[in-house]
Image (cartoon, rainbow, N blue to C red):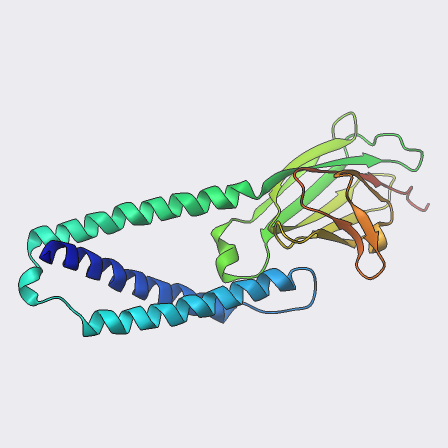
Length: 234
């Protein structure tokens, strides 16, 4: 019983310390701002507050109900560390799996005003998690790609990411496309170009216009859009 008690006490103590540290760090970074990312950031803040309160309660209980000194043998301590390491690895693997489940392919096809493909257009993209703290579990993705002969390019991103596209082609006006994301429960909002001007959503078919928010794209799997560039003014 002493071994089980030490293992359980060590698990709760270290979890409480880590939980309090992570939640305090996250709360210091979360900033609530208007926009489609606000719901996700608000949920993250509530989660962090809950984790902090629970961690502090567990920490006090661990201090109060500390096992006797005789229970801290070398074998018991080694077992406690080993069990915690296995559980930590399993939890981390689960989090990575959940993060990856939010990923999707964004296919952008660049066209001219006549509807013809624009090959070799340069697209600089930046995909990054919304909010702070918990959002940092995923990484920022940034790079550049050229459209193929059909005017298309495919980018792997996440439904919990905001993504910026900067499109340039000699002889055409520069164009920026911005998709604000809020996870799998809320639609992506096209905030640039205004009201989705010059943008057509080919997939998903459930994309729609809202009189207050503009063009909304539900996070139903992969997304495919057509982007129309205008000729440069001579």
